Length: 158
Image (tube, rainbow, N blue to C red):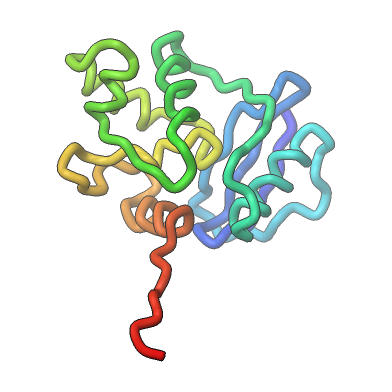
């Protein structure tokens, strides 16, 4: 399994994968610089994450290979359908998956997402619009949502 580190505005990201795809993108607790040498199979992920943080990419196109249960993988696939700059509630996600009563299981699968940002679990919010449940910290969730949907200042006076 190849590994590389990428310094991001939210901390150092560890990217792991092989010829079958990217299996994990996670934040590390250490402040690490970006890796100097990037394995070939991880180069597309590094490039696309850099473009995302630069504001020039809003749809990832990567071969993914996360480990998880069939249910978790089903949730992660549905997460990828939430458009850039948009949010939906855990309840709405549960309904899209066909079982509104599975909201806790959906939330748990969301929390186990091994592909930070690429599988956008940060776009899932509480039914009341609150920022709830984010393993990387709510401040990061807020940052990501603002990055994807910045408020444009309107000119009030000319």
